[in-house]
Amino acid sequence: VPFIRLDDEGNQMADDGRWWLVPHWAKEMPKAAMFNARIETVDPSPAFRDAFKMRRCLIPADGFYEWTKADDGGKDPWLVQMPGGAPYAFAGLWAHNTRMETPVTSCTIITGPSIAPINQIHGRMPIILDPAVFDAWLNPATPADNLKGILARHLDGQMEMHRVSRDINSSRFTERPAPIVNSL
Image: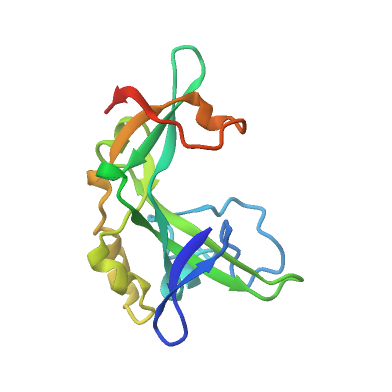
């Protein structure tokens, strides 16, 4: 997964990481799911605490999917985007682990309770940061006491949702399905 972080000189750089955070101190791949860090517990959690203090990143995206149960027992996918499909960035954490046999760089997103309109289909969602706070979020010198306030500066309320074809779940299709009629 591509992500943006600061290099040793404080310049933004693109990096690639394995999805699911592998803390720098882990001696083996985590068995617990660490693909999301909950905003409510990210700072005291041993798995995320160090990255939250010092290794924050931006994970660029132009959409994500959530699913709802349909009347026929299936699941309907919803594409969540900014208006016009504009790009944005999730608040993320990253780690580089050299303690394992094969070094690994990894990342995860931070999630929080969903807000309108996403709360109509799911109780949680990724934190999508306002570009005005990107520099403060990435800067390891930003005081830890300020970080949750930065996470409150999100663009989530601007998101739009469109139900898309169930083909999104099929490996036979390689392109993103076009939105279908239903919108919230």
